[in-house]
Image (cartoon, rainbow, N blue to C red; front, side, top):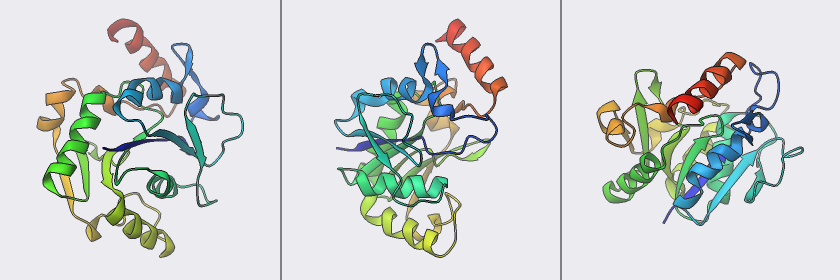
Length: 199
């Protein structure tokens, strides 16, 4: 059993507006991600530091437990509200997430007895498409934040991380499309073109 948290708390500075609510194929981007992952778990929720203005997504929306806006704060919020000891955390701006990859990460975590399963692509670690063990990761992440460390990976050295490389990722997502994210209008237009032509 595992939970799914969709992180929609970013400041969207490069987009100029809340990208979670930008329409993508007729749905707010966050809802597009929700549709793709909601069958994975009975506990699927969205976290954000700005819940005002969100439409009814048909799932629970939680305000970040810390008022400051940072990705690590969103991650800690996911740990706080997850109903299971394993939670998969995904970003709201990844419209092509492959659910089988998320399920595989959670199964790996459970089977290997590690604290987190994090993909590593040619761009580096991908902590916003990863699985975490709440009981060990929550205290480590919270301690890092209280020490002024706001980077998503600033606490990874204090828990047992298992990285999966592109060879493993491609078993579930051959084109690595799960890692396409939207930060700018150009990214949005490119992703919309891909959705029309390949999705």
